[in-house]
Image (cartoon, rainbow, N blue to C red; front, top):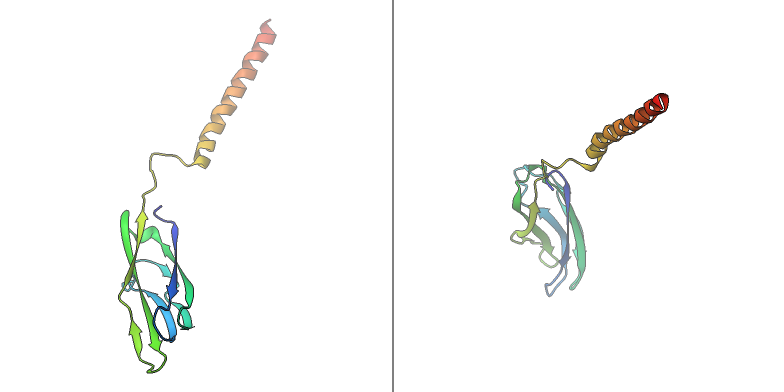
Length: 136
């Protein structure tokens, strides 16, 4: 739902034939700062061949439009031998944002509406019984 925080979890695997170092995942869709994505970078560190690590981001959906939204993440790492920095192209994650229903009252609001009606009904029944006893 729009306004909630969506959690994005994914695994990062070193599928290269050699170790890499200083691995990090960075959201690239948020370079304009329009959408709040935390953390701004998820640092994994050094990865050996075949290593798999998890990365997790929280996305505030308040500024996203209703419908399908795409958020891209890039992976940056250093070659263990040359110390050269590499970055992958953006990996897109799809988030479907739904608008809350405006005509439906929340459950708590319903209890505030129903409570006075119930109290009035109870008072009316008690009043009718008391009046019936006085007249009868």
